[in-house]
Length: 231
Image (cartoon, rainbow, N blue to C red; front, side, top):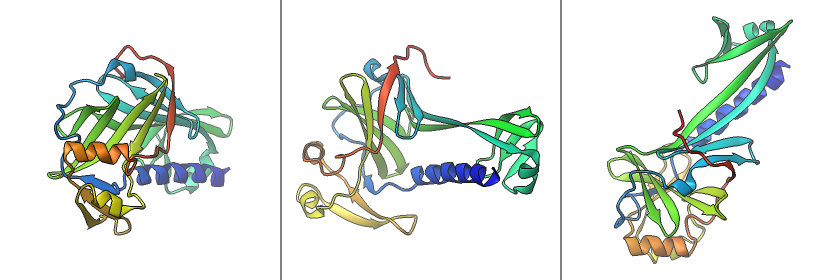
């Protein structure tokens, strides 16, 4: 039982770490450069979505995209005491790697805890801005003074939503023929990054030719509209 619990926790931690890695493609300015930011996320995107691939929910309100994943774990007090990464504190399960407390239910020798992980993918503020682009939303997340990560949100048939991250294309020569490509060393000392500063027309051409945002790892299906702001 303990090995199963640790495997689940380690898997979720790895996923969170991968999600926080430096992006492969960095932009010098919010995109598209000639479009004014929106103050709110358009109503057509609002709702609660479900991803079958990893059993996660996506909440979209007028300001944010919030990913939520939950699961139950079952263990015992003996296993928790023996695990340096877990601790029972005031009737809650404390997971040291997350610095988080989770409620528990005791049934005999078994302890059940519902783990809920919330990840704010994007939230409109001074360092995160959203712009409309050809029927899509471009989410701009500021990394530092002259570096931005770009996500493109697309919606199909009003119900299916995808979030695509820019990825280094196989054909860098084709990309470099459109806009100047600078190669950087990733801060994690493993991945290579490229730095782009396209004009509005260059960004449109990059998108239309499918060089950076040609795929998405996840597809979310809307399960019902959302009319109120997410707490």
